[in-house]
Amino acid sequence: MPLQIVRFTTPPDLAGDVEHGIAELFGAVHAARPAGLRYLAARLTDRPEFLLLLGLPDGTPTPLPEIPQTTAFRARMAGWADADPAPRPLTVLGDYRMLG
Image (cartoon, rainbow, N blue to C red; front, side, top):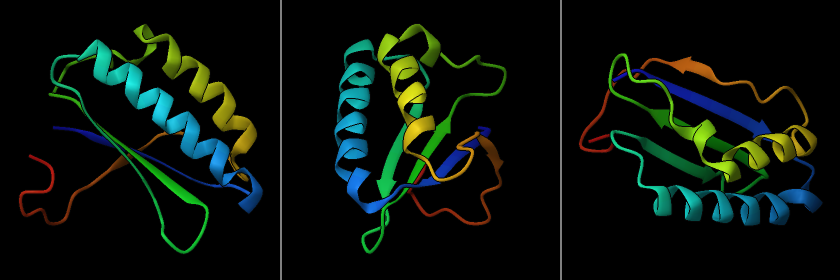
């Protein structure tokens, strides 16, 4: 399963807005229940740095653009992030029951 990661940092005063946006995003993803999608969001405890991890079965296009809240989140993320929050491929070097 190919994985992608989006990693970004925000100014501390915007961290609450990002957390609220993530809650809305994942509410919509849970409601849509896209098949095969694995999706995780996290924040580093000691700083306003966020991680989004996306996994899909090989050859499966991402269903996220079909969920309106994901498009809205991506637009807001560009304003929150200190640098380009572009998705990047991720290579897993070890996994014990974390990813499936």
